[in-house]
Amino acid sequence: MEQIAIETKSKRYSLVLGDGALQLLPQQLKALPRSISNILIVTDEIVEKLYLSKLVSILSDEYKIYTHTVPSGEKAKSFEQYYACQSAALTYGLDRDSVIIAFGGGVVGDLAGFVAATFMRGIRYIQVPTTLLAHDSAVGGKVAINHPLGKNMIGAFHQPEAVIYDISLLKSLPEKEMRSGFAEVIKHALIKDADFYHWLKEHIRNLNDLQGEKLQYCIKKGIQIKADIVREDEKETGIRAHLNFGHTLGHALESELGYGSITHGDAVALGMLFAIWLSEKEYDTLGYREFVSWFERYGFPISIPNHLEAARLLEKMKSDKKAKAGNVHMVLLKDIGHVQIKPFENQQLLAFIQQFSQLQSMK
Image (tube, rainbow, N blue to C red):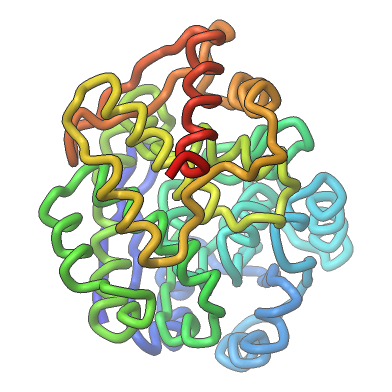
């Protein structure tokens, strides 16, 4: 079992990582400075069937437990599900001494965290991730829901009290969800740690390698990179924007295709390939074709679907939180671990999206 300290300007909390970490949740709850009146566990339909009874049994001897289940997938990050969670919190009589437990993947963590951030102007919550993808979203305090016009556009910064990451819960994940989470692991290596990038290429030859000690190491390294950045820039006024590498186009793809039609990780992977291709054009340092071969090895998409229009994607990118004064600011790489944020005029970026869309069809 490993413990990682997450520090921001507003809070310091612990992340417990390892096989069986769920059993340490009561200990983390007892360590909170104020007593707990009751607990609301927010989970999704899949995690409810697999693990909810286990979590309830761990906690029910000492706490009054309520549960609320939302649909699985990105559709849960909606106004309707946010309202339903708030209604559940009110119905169950949660108060300022209550704790919400986000028990699921990144979607549940974002939704439940936003509920906690806004219920009675903010109550405590704990992240209990059940996916590899959530190694990114569970740390750092960004919580949000989606709008049809943009992903994560309605949200807040609200740090959890703790993160309990039991990697045994990841054993039930299908391959596409492991691949989705691995995209964020790759992202962390590319923006911050060249040694970790080379380790990934050598040790994770395919997705079957994501288990045991290798899986735990990937999660630990990804979390440490994220934590280092968040420590320096909690509310994305500076280098935290580096974490958006691959997300500008990635979020546009998710929105344009329909949330849930493509996994977040697949969309981000394609967004990273676009950013790498653009970086190579700007700085002439990265081997784009090598990255295409590497991503293909894991089954990531390597081309924009033919039916998507470049102009529509550009409009989605312009509505992204990272756009400024109508111009898209792309997170690029001068080299592995060396990030550069560069603004592009609309027509220039549109031409680049069109060129990139044609690349794989020309192979």
